[in-house]
Image 1 (cartoon, chains in turn orange, green):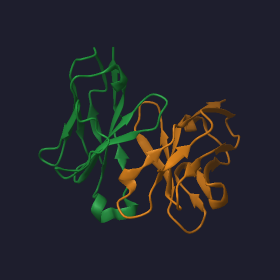
Image 2 (image 1 turned 135 degrees about the vertical axis):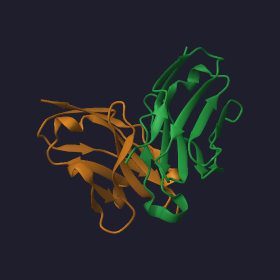
Image 3 (image 1 turned 120 degrees about the horizontal axis):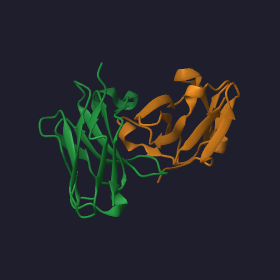
Image 4 (image 1 turned 45 degrees about the vertical axis):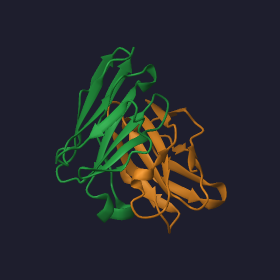
Length: 116
Length: 118
């Protein structure tokens, strides 16, 4: 069975500082990997996804993530955080293949607080 | 373009009562999902519809939860009777067409209904 671990429940960074959110997964092969963001009172929004190929993927809002097979990790990064990035971030995995977006397994989330 | 609409925004009920949530997906979206998000956890899929047919309801507690999408457009999720552990945010999501989009399927989420069972 697939699983996702987000070790950090809560992270606080200063505006303008860099950010890295950790995500580790467990799956027999290389799964599809996703990062979603959930702002307060909002639904989830897809930031980026990895299926195959280049291990560094670019997403929206200046986010990027790097897939490291050897570490079973898919960490999310941003060079300079803005106050509007304060939200909850979810890493998710799905088995590779057609129509797998519905088979997402989400991590427990990391809440990001940004101080001015 | 209008997003996924959900109502009510909040609902407070007592245990053993019934409750229903409504979702109107983005116009033209064939695939609709209901997720349950318990505080401190990631969303968990409850049921998936393709048009008005159920594709996957393997994680739906069918003894108390039911969902329908009669005309292949909007959908309702019902809990009867509710338990304390049903307190959660219920998210609805839709996509254009799971079968046609394949791996590139993009989900659009509503802002959810927050249920508190006392």
